[in-house]
Length: 157
Image 1 (cartoon, rainbow, N blue to C red):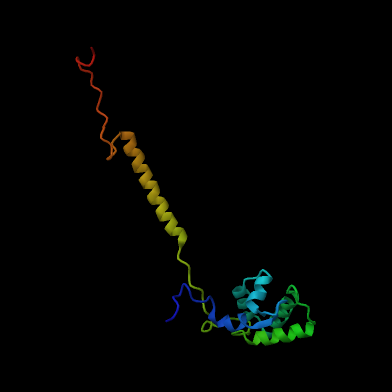
Image 2 (cartoon, helix red, strand yellow; image 1 turned 135 degrees about the vertical axis):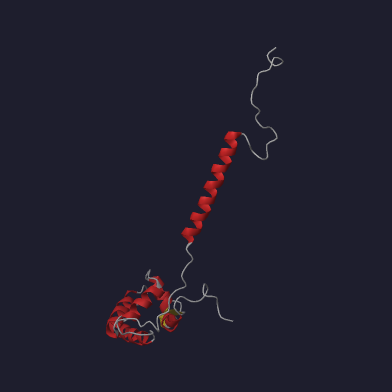
């Protein structure tokens, strides 16, 4: 069964790149490209999407710089460039522009602001109605309704 669009990966075409190993962490666990980008405080899908729109050589240069900036990983520039070249080959394209056929868009989030606005308007209408009834002393749950004060001779004594 396929995942609903809301739970599907943002860009499944980038999975091969994002889950590729860049190296190993200090404790020997393989470091994925996704984790590496996150360690650099970059959004993995956004950065991978950006790299996929660059020309191949530009993407390799950008990725080499990112690999060299990784904390705890010291490697020669030539090794970082070789890793970057292999990783760029895992990107869906590197032609400088995205083709509409291969472009996969994120699931559009529902417009939360309009939903909030609706409930805010409902709350305002209910509050106004409540205060109008309160000012008229005409609340449906009240047993005592304000009677007009008519002074009769029996009351005045």
